Image (cartoon, rainbow, N blue to C red; front, top):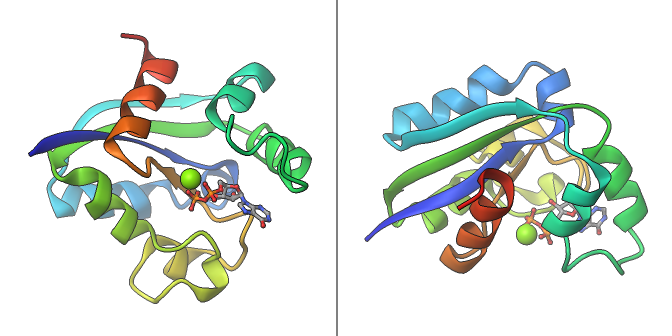
Length: 134
Ligand code: IDP
Ligand code: MG
């Protein structure tokens, strides 16, 4: 089933010049790129995007981190791409992410973990509408 996923490279990945590596992985895997945009997010956009996390103790740090520079937003399309991309990204805590995953190869932290990817087709629809309108 053809799906879309909302993915962004977080400010650590942009600053560490990891964009080409990460984008290259998605290109080589064969996803269709529907949108790609470097964007400085607003505080309101971060609160909306992470609405399920705003009451977590780590949220103030997460918000400051996501606002610390531009993110590279992408909408990717492909057969069952939401799960496939989550597999490529690896688990949240990069310290335990397996080698071969984006986080396992490129990050070491649970907070600064270089990339966001939608966790379900429903989240993807909400996130794409939020960042790119209907
Ligand atoms: P995910 O990005 O793998 O889907 P979520 O649990 O949805 O992970 O958390 C969203 C983001 O919040 C994570 O990618 C990470 O940047 C941050 N985060 C989650 N848990 C922690 C934590 O325990 N400490 C610091 N940051 C965290
Ligand atoms: Mg998540």
